Amino acid sequence: MDDLVEIYGYDFTSYSQASLKRRINRLIKIDKFPSVAEFRYNLRENKDYFNRFIEQITVNVTEMFRDVSFYKTLREQVLPVLATRPLIRIWHAGCSTGEEVYSMAILLKEAGLLHKSLLYATDINPAVLMKVREGLYSLNLMKQYSENYILSGGKRDFSSYYTAQYSVAKLDSELGKKIILSTHNLVSDSSFNEFQLILCRNVMIYFDKPLQDRALKLFDQSLETLGFMALGSKESFKFSEISKGYKQLENKEKIWRKMKSTDY
Image (tube, rainbow, N blue to C red):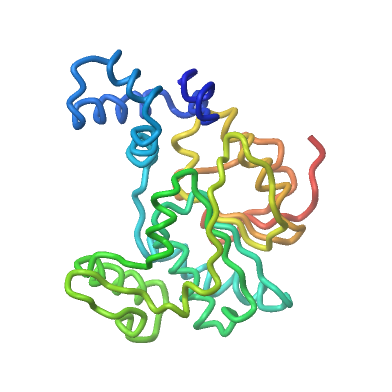
């Protein structure tokens, strides 16, 4: 891990070590390195292999409208509040391949808010951001995504949001026009804007507590008062100092509203 900081400026020392070790061992096995030393040498000397390392080591498991009650809450309780804003800025931190970003774009479109929204989609992994830009997903997944969409309160024909092209579904380009892509490292990068809604779901479960706290304070600094912060179903920030300034929505979804700024 010290090599990656020294050569590439990527710091994974605060990631969950058990999870990281498991993924590295898997990569060594897949790429058939005869020893850890050869794996390390290749990682140090070969920038292309480092890019593959980033692609493989970061976790990219996501889906559209995952956790349907969460999206139903966004639709019914959060978007009506954001609708009062002249411009809506939303940050999807650790966006992976973008399924949740496009889900949000659909919610905004159906609420009549997409035209005045900007969706900032960031990830440490440049390769997954390319997939977001393409908006291409396996056609086999669309049945599950359609079911998620309906259960989350969707009323339209989900197939109207994509065009089938052989084995892939190409999402409506209108949805992607408001998505701004950028690499961003939650370990080392700083705030880059002020937002009304920040989503970082199922990312911090791979961080240790100090890094979780750093990321939460970064989000807090990036979120305007009365804005919303959303985390994954197994994530919380009760341990962090910033929790004093937030109130969770009454239905207990992992969505909190920032009530005041916190000194820390």
